[in-house]
Length: 205
Image (cartoon, rainbow, N blue to C red; front, side, top):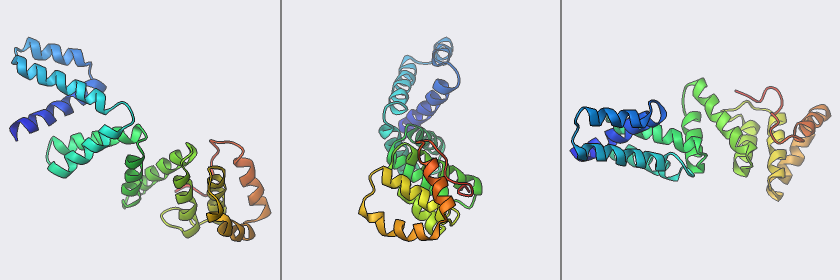
């Protein structure tokens, strides 16, 4: 257990060194202060591990974050390490991490957190994720976390159609078209001409 805690602590230190202070300076300090060679080797190993975990497709960062949460919930340095690894997995756009971030954010009582989740969901939809576009549409349709709005829902349903949604949305689109004004429909069509376009006004938290 002591070795496991030391490994986690060094990995956390390596993250902060890699993304804060220059790693080689930290290593030089260890050597200058006559730390044992096996400790310095553990630090080197931690740096290698962190670089592997925080690059690529985010799979390792996410799985490691979940592992640290599962085995050592709440304790230092495990939870701090888990939080940072989870953050990296979201930034690397690992889909399970993105969806978990959205679920956590939307489940928070904090409006600021819910806005972060909304932004993440829009990032996914804009990057071509069909399920994210459909999720946005359904949330606006029902008023689940996001503002209830037929115009906002129609924007994301139409975006979903461009991403490959098929007959599953035909009925709801037909019904929605009768509830959205011709002016709003035209505005939505114009916005959808641009991949990175924003939804209509009033669609944000």
